[in-house]
Image 1 (tube, rainbow, N blue to C red):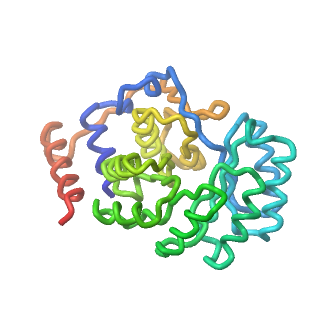
Image 2 (image 1 turned 180 degrees about the horizontal axis):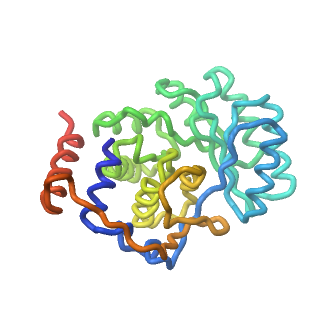
Length: 283
């Protein structure tokens, strides 16, 4: 909800779909993104991997944990047999599919595939077990679901200082909006923890806001911003994927952004700002 309110406020303040001024929103520079391969059968995933590489993606992210683990290793090995890490960066997302007991062995096997990182190898909420994995894993671990519901600054600090992940993955719609995500980024950078931004199946309106905000952060890592373009029933989008980058390509007339019913623009912005402030100030 907070991210939606922040997006609405930004639209009212700017009166345009160009929410931040950047080389991205001016159409001068794209944002590098990963090509996402969803879970499926072995043959489906093999075909999707081929499509992503053909489309020009140099960073491929695979969802794992849905089929036999040995078959998933085979898929990764097929990629590595043809494309070394210098050509194709591989990320995997386990979505908490491993148990703490089996995770070390599986991480050791996965490390033979020269992976960039693995997201959330075990389910969220097991801080001590995750901390041990982060300390011992041959693959850098990125936290994803682990961050959901951690909204107070002191709780964020406790999580990062306990687990010591290599990366965190931020979804503004799930991690306290843009303001909450910026707090995560500041705390992570103080600790030498890397990060990247992903979308979470938002509409094109939400994806546009996330992408434009992300562009202001000047990060060079590939981001996870392609998912909003999956929908067939969606709002018109100024975004498109060209090669392995997301671009802002808006030649459509600017929409007419209206105020809240019964208010003028200034009052609408003030009302939304007050609501957002009330949601972001925790006791």
